[in-house]
Image (cartoon, rainbow, N blue to C red; front, side, top):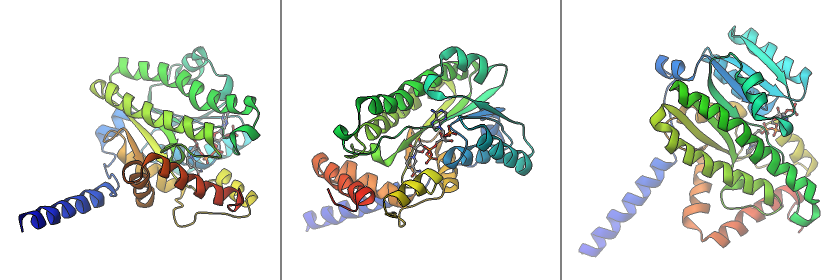
Length: 299
Ligand SMILES: NC(=O)c1ccc[n+]([C@@H]2O[C@H](COP(=O)([O-])OP(=O)(O)OC[C@H]3O[C@@H](n4cnc5c(N)ncnc54)[C@H](OP(=O)(O)O)[C@@H]3O)[C@@H](O)[C@H]2O)c1
């Protein structure tokens, strides 16, 4: 009888804990948080998709934004739309992030701006089996997703710590949850980003600087949609989120956690992959899904 009661209690506890884990963070952007993250937000990789959505979301709260990417026309279109919608100051910086230096970050990004928020959104992805891609492609993935991220994050974190306030989002991916075949290097860089975000969340918290890794799943950005179309329209419509939904949920989580999987289904998948399945089974599971999405499971 006692054992049965204990078991039912455990089941109820696990069910309640799982349900609680699927809830989104809802911390509002109070005047205090806006002041902590103001006056300027920098978005690295902002000419479309999630980066453009980040610019728009931050401007909604009255932050001025600096948008960075390589395509001047696309950047200006995004900047113009944000200016019209929110009446904030928007500056564009055309820059190939693959080659940015610490001095560029100090001179061109921070400059004399009051930078209170930073989003590292850009990524390079080389899809396909590890050996079907030349080494140079893998090195480009690690250059942008790891080296550039550090080159920008280090001086900006130092600047925020010195000033005693700020917020930072590093864009991760569900692909980085356990390691994903057919995107081996990309998924590994996203695991790195999740770990780094959690570590920085802990280290910078005492300095009033919030850091969060945004673990997005399938998001209907132009690059996701064109990749899906190339793969014969293999879309995961059930788990897809809009860029706006991803950034709104992630901003609400910033300060409360070191990394957030956005959307209930991504949270559930993360729980399954990280906590319920043994690691090897988790890799097989996510890799089969990737295989289906990219080649209709023909491998
Ligand atoms: N979409 C999804 O389903 C999904 C899922 C999980 C995670 N994510 C993550 O979310 C982030 C954004 O993804 P996304 O789908 O919106 O788009 P994306 O195609 O990865 O584009 C991101 C932005 O980065 C810029 N960019 C790329 N390389 C650059 C470089 N070398 N220098 C400067 N800017 C560069 C692009 O602009 P330019 O080409 O103009 O330079 C674009 O504005 C990425 O970190 C991605 O890994 C996306």
